[in-house]
Each structure stands twice: as C-alpha cells, then as structure tokens.
Image (tube, rainbow, N blue to C red):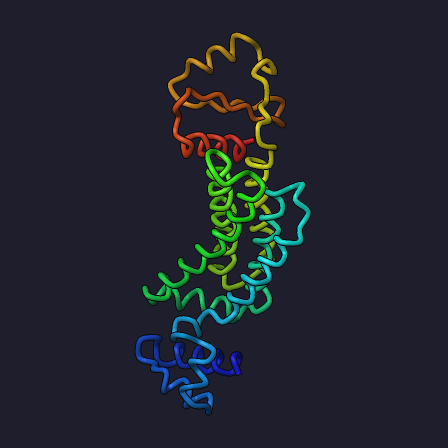
Length: 242
C-alpha cells in the first residue's frame, strides 16, 4: 500500500504539479481512503521520499555491526547505501531530483532528510573519537565531508539524467574524503620528513601551507589558530592537484 500511494502521489505531482495536488487527489488515484494515506505518510512531502526511512534504518543497522578499525571507511561505505537506493530506480530518482529543484518546500524537506543522514554518521564517529572537544569536532566535520562528497557525485549523475555509472563519481569523491581524514587520531606526519629550511619557511607563512612529498604524502603546516575550514580547504586543494 505504501508503494501504491507513493506511486499515485508522484504521478499526480508530475501531471498537475506538487502544489495543485491534494491528499484527496492522491487517495482517489490510489483507490483508498484518507486514513490509509496518513497511516503511511504524515504529509505530501513524505510521499515524495518514501524510501528514506528504510534507507536510514539500513544505514543505522550497518554502522552498528561494522568493524570499527576504519571508522572513516565505515561511514563512507554507509553513504553508499544511500547511493544504491537512488541507483536502484534511476527514472524515479531523476524525476524526483527535477521535482525538488522546482518546489522550494521539497528542497527544504530534502535538506532535513540529508541532515538526518549526517547526524547518523556523526553519531557513529563520536562513538569512535569521543563525545567532546576535538573528537566531537572531528566527527562532525568528517560526517559533513562524507555527505557533501556523496551528494556531489550523486548530483552529477542525476543532472546527467541517470546516464552512466553513478558509483564512479561517488567513489571518486569519497576516496578524497578518506585521503584527507583516514589518518588515525593523533598521528602527525613529522616536519622532519622535509628539508629543515623549507619547513621553517612554511611555519612562517601567512596561512596554512600544504606541501606534497614525492606525490604520496601531504604535509600540512599551519599557524596556531588557523580556522579548521581553511586547513581543510588547503588539504583538499593539494590532494586534488596531486
């Protein structure tokens, strides 16, 4: 019944527009009563995203059972569960993407769904890194990075009309996140890995300075107090260029 209602709702949204479609229209198309609709969906917006609750539950279950030796890899793999949900039904996913671009209310709703995924990932990482201080900051920043990377790759695929392999762009984006954040907490690449004079010059730089060593390691030297967003930005730029 949930699928029947969601299909009827989406057909009407495409035919008449989201704002001009009522719950009465949806239940009439599905051949059921209003009570049946509200048993499965609190609102019209929920009918546009009928699969996210199941996907969120699957993600939560996956993270509860995953090996915690690689927490960044675990949350990246958890994000791929969302990707598979979209990839399993390309036509619906593309149509929904276009609809959410046209209806501001749906875009707002979608952002709230994305935030729930991010909070789930951050909650798992806090269990690994700690609930306070830099551990919590690290968890929040990594979770936001994973969601942003996943969504960047996913939207490239959706904007193409669902052409090609959606995993390619998402894997590339998530690999970047892992390259930046997978280093264990507290592990520091020694500045001595670089010539002494060059390291001293970097410390005296006006801002954070990423330096590539042999194309494999990126050493970040930053003044105390440099904003975290600036450090991340410079790392991403260095990794992207290497």
